[in-house]
Length: 190
Image: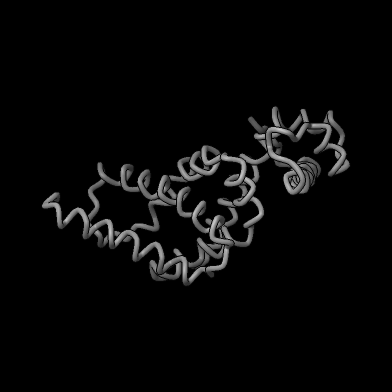
């Protein structure tokens, strides 16, 4: 677990620790990275590390949460924007931190990415247009399905060399979910 106070020094130290971890993950797997490795890579003391984080994995969780917080903050400025623009903005924000996404994917830590999605489930529900007629009791399931799907989606993007841009990714998602919807329609399932 991470526990970072809102003061500037702690936030700066947490950022440095996160950068140090990503540097280490360029050389080793997450399982092989030690707190000493991170401490040496970022120059922040071990005592400060332990004041802010319990484990190395907690640093990834913190960075993932901060990535989503920044993305949602950016998208808040798009109030009244189309669903297309909001989703493309979401992809653009995540892609700006592709090193973090790749680190989680390459180290099999989908759980961190999924947990972040689910922590922000209420905010992510705003990506589902009201006109879609999703009943209130169905909305948590819809967000859950989208969140779990996005973990596989990012895996596919990383495995493919991260070549698509945000607009292309939007089309991939739109086409993929359209295909799934048609498959259910063909089976007679409602």
